Structures are given as C-alpha cells and as structure tokens.
Picture 1 (cartoon, one colour):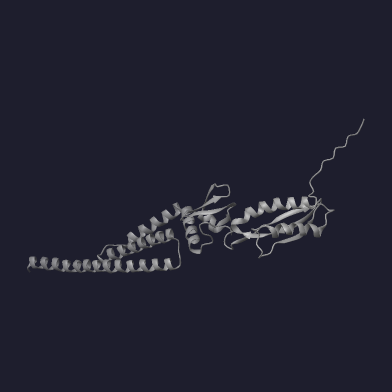
Picture 2 (tube, one colour):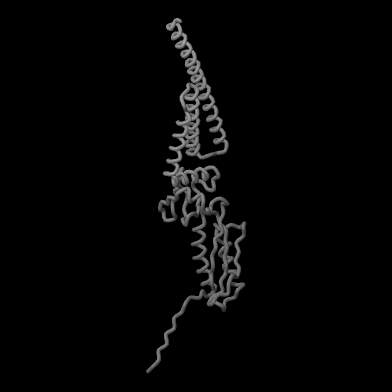
Length: 271
C-alpha cells in the first residue's frame, strides 16, 4: 500500500472540500451583501415615502444593516464549517444582558420610535404632556425637548411621553379661549351679555367662525358668572386672552355694570 499516495489523495480531497466551502462562503457573502444593499435601499424608499423623521431613518437603517450583516456572517461561518450554535447562543445571552441593563433606555427608544412613526406632534407644535406645556423644539430617539412658556427647556423621556396623555394645541389650527366674568346681582343680564359680546366681535384676532359665545354659566354666592368663549388662531391665544380680559373690564366699567369683589366691614362697639 502506497501511504504517500493515500496522504496525497486525502490532502487533495480536503483541499477540494474546503475549497468548495470557501468558494460557497464567498458566493454567499457577495450575494448576501447585494441582497442586504437592495433591502436597505427599498426600506429607505418606503420610509421616505411615508415621511419618517430623518434621524429615525438613519438610526433604523443602521440598526437593520448591522442585524442583517451579523446574520450573514453567521451563515458564512456555518458554510465553511464553523460551529455557529454556541456563537448564536453567546449573542443571544449578550443581547439579553444588554437589554436588562438598558431596560429604561430601551423603553425610551421604543417610545421615540413610536412618536416618530405615528407623529402625535411635530417640531413647532404647542403641546401639554407629563404636567408640562411647551413648544416642541427637538424630537430625539430617547427624549423630546420642549421650550416652556417662560422660555425654559423641558426634557421629557420618550417612554413616559408615549405612554401618557398628550394634548396638541396646534393640530387644529384654532383654539377656544375660556373666560369667566362675574357681575353683581343687580346687573341686567341681557345688557351684560351684549357688552361682553361687543368686546368679542370688535377684537381683530377673534374669529367670526366659529362664532364667539357669551352664556350665563352660574348664579354664584356673590356674582352672576358669564362663560365667555371666543375663538382664535393658536398663535394668538395669549394675546386674545389678556386683551379680552382687559377690554371686558373697561367695557363693563363704562356701562356702569359692577364687578363684585370681597368687602370687609368693621364694627366697633363702644364700651
């Protein structure tokens, strides 16, 4: 028996076997990379058509790209004969450990993704959420930044923001200003309503449609209270609020209609 020929044949057989595996792995890598590129391109096109936020697009594209590349690497290693079961288990265990360590951050990340996909608000909107009111300045993956009414910066985690109630004052484009004015019980109701309504209809920033309303709301302990409801554009809310309040006070004074206020009476008893 020629041992040298046997060894040569074994080496040739091994070389052919591993050579074919390597060639197959190279082909899988080339084809897989091409498929990943096409998938990423198609995903990017879909996100652009649906107007996803740019920062969200970049983040999701990078995340998807890395995930697909890791899967491709595992497939290539398995093709050349490398045991990938333990490798996949290590990756799963590492992912679980990272997920447990970053549980809060992942919740904020998921909230940021939901906000960017469903868009309950956008940059420039005036919103109320988590006990805060402000204009949306920036929407990030983990947090959303607002500019408060006193020009303070408010940072809200996206996890709590996406799971709580959000009031968007900008979406509809108009807002109703809710005001209450109280007058004395000896005041004429129709005249009072007419005076207040004249103030509303004469203000340039009060909308004609929807029409403003003035209604008797309550017979309080010391006053008759009128619910006054003018409508305005969202950006004019505070202007209308303050100017209507001032103008109604002046109009009621000019009409001789008293606005009641607490009185203190002192009684002195001679001893």
